[in-house]
Each structure stands twice: as structure tokens, then as C-alpha cells.
Image (tube, rainbow, N blue to C red; front, side):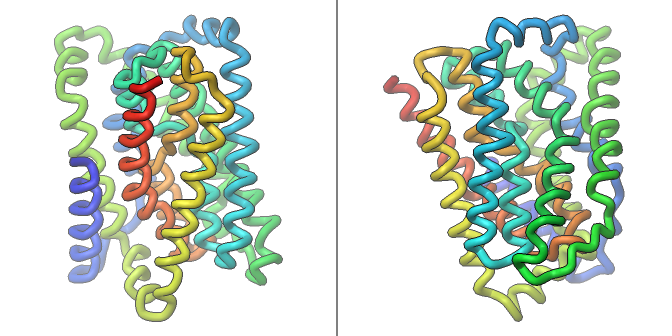
Length: 311
């Protein structure tokens, strides 16, 4: 179902942009994503619960090492082999954004520790700034290899502050207010899947309807081979990711199983939001791996979940 929502949003967005002047990017799309995709996940997060991370510190450290050291290294290797600055940036952005809107679904469905899963989700959201700084570092240090000039037109490193406010601070504050109304919390919880699907459709329609996104048509005309390169790059990344996750985590432990899902699933929608305003810096080809990730991550997650049922 989600794949249909993704394809429909992307196709209709591109069609709208091609037949109009297209949308102009606004950071408010980050706020919309925060209130519709992230806020519902924060209902179960309490600041005092952060202390619970200490008893499971070994699991947390393994999760951090995998998500912010090993996976980025995989992404850098794939980027260098792709021989395209933008494709590499797209894969790298996927590598440094853990979790996502579906992660709690897979955690609960596989019998993992939902409490630790929520804490890891909140922790990784607070590390979005680190993810953006790592993307900035990727641009600075890899540009010479690809023989391009890294012109940080959108100030990726400075945008981190806005992302933290719009995706974490505001949704968390609003979640505290919403918690005062139990009927509203119950309604949002009951219809969360529908809210999420509608939100993803609106976000994708908007992002693919942006003026910048129309450059994808030019990319298809002049460099169609990058589509195939992106498909291979994303498939290789997920194969390496899933393989490493199976090796690192003890899946007989509910806590480690929760951390496992925070590595296997990447925050694709957030990656798409961030990539949209950085295409002037990294190139429009940056969007390709992230678009492909929607078509790869969901089937892989289904296969992994079925495998976990046998453990």
C-alpha cells in the first residue's frame, strides 16, 4: 500500500510541476513532516525515560557505531564507485538518517522492545544535526575526487538548526500539549496509519512538484544511465546494511532486535525533504537513490520480518 502512495505522490507531483510553474521550496514542509509523521511517535516518549538508555548502553553503542560509522563508510565506498557526486550524496544521506516513519511498525510487528525502540527513535532524531554535518563533510572532502566544486549554497551545516527546531523541538512541545487531551491522543493513535499515508502523499506531491525536481526530466534525457547506477547503489547499500545488522545484533534479544530495525530502516522521507533543498549543492541526481530507496526498503523489510518470525 505504501509503495502505491509513494509512486502516486511522486508521479502526480512531477506531472503537476511539468504543467505549471511548480512549487517554491519552503522549510515549512519540515514542520508539516514533524507534526504529522514524528509527533505521533513522541506520545510515548518521556524525558525521564532517557535514563533507561543506560541499562542498555551496549545496545545503544552498537546502534550508534553501526549507524554513524559503519553505514556511512559503506556509503562512501559506494559513492566513490558510482562515480557521481549527487548519487553518492543521496546514498550517504540515507546512511546517516536512521529509523523513519515505519520503524516502530516493524519493531512492534517483530516482537522487539517498543519502549527502547521509541527511545532510539527520539535519540536518532536529536542526531539529525550530526547527520547534516556529516553530509556537509562528505561534500567538502569528496568534491575533489569527483572533480566538482562543492559550493554549499544552501548552508547545509547551518540548516541543521532549523531542522532541529522544526522536526524535534516543535513536535515535542506540541506532543506535550496534545497529551493533555486523551480523546485527541486516542484519535491520532487510532488513525495514525492513515495520517501517515496521507502525509507521505502530500509531502511527496509537494517535493516532486517543486521547480528543482523538474530537472529530473533533463537528467533522464542527458544522463539516463544514472538511473541504473542509482538502483545498483541503493540495492548494494541495503544488502550491506542488512548483512551488517544481522551480524552486529543478537536478534534473540528484544532490545537488540529494536536496535536492529533502527539500522535496517532508513528515514527516507526526511532524506527526501533534505535532499530537495540541497540539489543545487549536490546535483539533481541526489534525488535518484532516495527515490529508489522507497522501492527497495519496503520489500526488504517485509522479507526481513518474515525471517525474524523463524528466529
